[in-house]
Image (cartoon, rainbow, N blue to C red; front, side, top):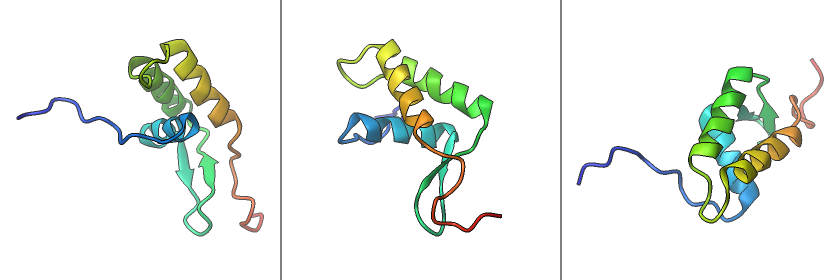
Length: 87
């Protein structure tokens, strides 16, 4: 059967779902050395993530609540790895 839309893998927590949306949109990345999530500070990627959250919220969640969760998670992620030395 031909699928026209590929779904994200199921996340165990709401925070995990929000992180997967942010990664898929390119709004965050993982530190290659330590694994910490880092905000890429890309406004276009952020908007893509918010749009993705509104279009495809987790089951039983409203689009507005899904977008708010993505915003909360993004606000909790810094733009640098706490374990990497300052540049």
